[in-house]
Image (cartoon, helix red, strand yellow):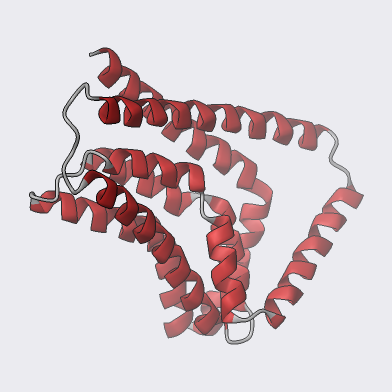
Length: 227
């Protein structure tokens, strides 16, 4: 369970879409406060999902080969297959987009980024929090929830694994927030440069993250279902 949660947490924190949105949030006026609202909502979603699963299991993993255990493994398998399929979908869409790319499309993307940036300027902390909820990679969070079914709260390592997952899944956002707090001008230039790079490479990043995590989940669940 520990390794699975760490890998899922790593995939969540590297997923590019929330990172791109968070850069706009912290770069806006009163961005540090809005960024904090984004992070708190992000963490609240993760904690709420984990808490619901633990309430349902009572903090005790179901016996091996029991219906709840098998259901969790099947759910993990389905999520893994979904991530692999989604990565292939993004890869094909990226290839079609590269083939059909033209200067007007790039200008449209720049205009879209400028429009979103202006909307962030007028956004409130509540808007930033809602954006965090919407951009949560829920498929990966669902995979984490299916994994948490195995958590045994009578052992301290389970608590550490859950805390480690939440912190790791939020680590990129926390790092950017702290960067803005301690070095705002330098951080804003660096983060806007990061967002520009991600705009050009987000499809490749999504494909790699979803494919690797999806293959891991499929392999692990199949091994446990057939072992």
